[in-house]
Image: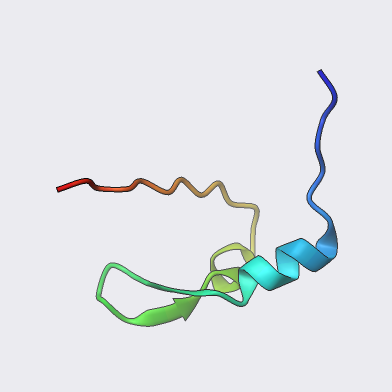
Amino acid sequence: MPEKQIDNQLLKQVGEQHILDEKGEKIRLADLWQEQRSVMVFIRHFG
């Protein structure tokens, strides 16, 4: 199976999006991976 790579442009666009941290404060997504590699999992809650 071929491996897909995320290009830098897409990564920059995604990194500029804001999310809420555990305290409810708005942060940039890129701040989460700025200092080290990270794995992000998004879970959608239905209900």
